[in-house]
Image 1 (cartoon, rainbow, N blue to C red):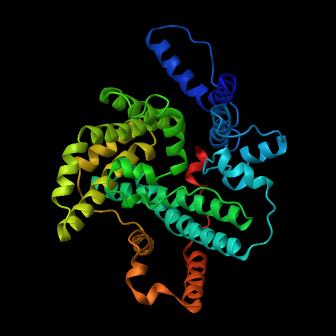
Image 2 (spheres, rainbow, N blue to C red):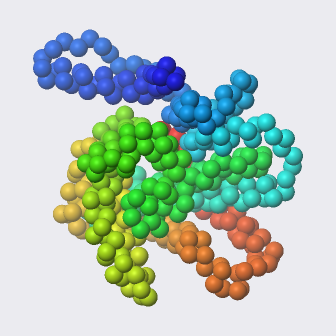
Image 3 (cartoon, rainbow, N blue to C red):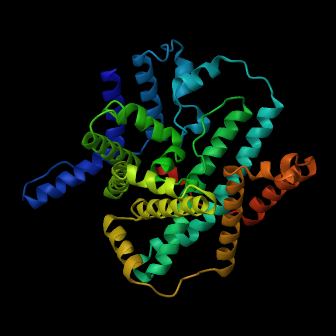
Length: 402
């Protein structure tokens, strides 16, 4: 197991992290006036390296723990590591969830095909209609932050929170949907994270396959929450610092991870106080407004951390935060039509997810048994919206870079 983990991670280190450490050692050497002869590596990053590295590590660890029988068929094992729908950006599967499916016979199944296509359709809507349209505004502001005030930067930060969600969850929907069309069931990767009422709940809803990977293979083996409270806080910080570093060899990602770890650590320290407050307002309208405040507060904490995730450098992130806090001004709108479309489609997304989150269909008999006509109108409307309002000259999926 140790040989497998070290050799697998060594490949990831060389391709993804060598230049980061090399550059930092070079800066230290310059500061100390030492000669540093090692230059940067100029090599291409293999496609999907971070994701299939973690997936192969899952296999090794689960076999070692006795939760999975060793796979004797190299082709099946290779298919598990490199299964194409989820290869580039997940979800990161466990061997016991997917390996057995490669031995099953998969005949045409109408329910699987229609479910998969509908999920893919919703994923395309989130990606090309919402995420890529929001990216136009976000890139304009963040790439020229020195020319914009805090009001515009605040809106761009909120937009980026939805951009990265729609981009990545859209990819996951397409990946899970395309696998389902062929009869394979992949794990859910997103569960309406911006309806979370705490940071802890957010990370149970966001990139679930990666969050549970770090929980099962880093946090719990370190002791998790079964140790004294100072060690619990330490375990949280280390786990999220590693998560940030996994996302990219840049200090911005490390600080993003550390900030989320700090949020969770503070949550542990204030758990009893927060529980008393929630219990006090756990009736009628007070409960509703308390939950709404928790959702909004959690969203803005997460959005603040996204500043480090999106900023081009640590220096840019600090300047952006300073402007948001101290330099208000007239809001930069850009293209009025594109802004209106963005707000309109974001509203559709939030209403749709609110209906799913709070199961509003169950409360209105009109929707209990929606007719075939209503369903097909919905599907065709989504197709028309994608064709008419999708941004098709867009960049790649955000998570392709990780």
